[in-house]
Length: 182
Image 1 (spheres, rainbow, N blue to C red):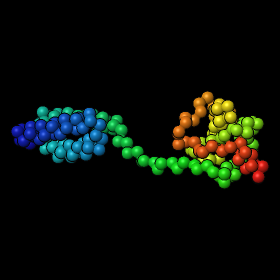
Image 2 (cartoon, rainbow, N blue to C red; image 1 turned 180 degrees about the vertical axis):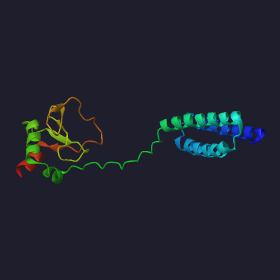
Image 3 (cartoon, rainbow, N blue to C red; image 1 turned 90 degrees about the vertical axis):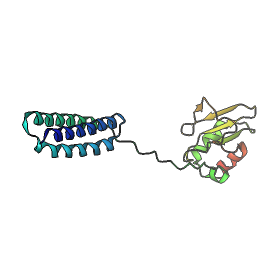
Image 4 (cartoon, rainbow, N blue to C red; image 1 turned 180 degrees about the horizontal axis):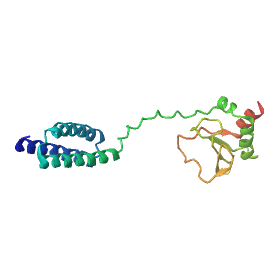
């Protein structure tokens, strides 16, 4: 191939390689792959036209450069897909009918934790599945205690007042009537 034409083709390939290098730095995996395919095809066209030792060595060096770029592209991770927005969870609405659906064993432990305090009120958590909800008891002396729903163990932190993650209060009497009405 005529030296001037070869030199121009080689420079064009080198410019494209620099572009691919920039895309790799920007972690643009797909664009880098497309650029690499384009440069490889141009090099494949140039390879058989190389005449003489200098042009053949130049084509070989370009091939080595492309192989190095290929390795760097392979190390790029694909871009993450945008997170799927989840539907907001619907809060459980607790009423006496819903409380009646809780197991007798569960309600019995809630009632036991309320003790003999007839002024005690219990509120249930509105998150989760509503099978073993956490709950909070406010006793007649204004002492508040929160319990886990699964083990009925006292929790260190109680629900904050005014939060929407807690139900309306149910009286000692209401729990007693639901429990003994089963």
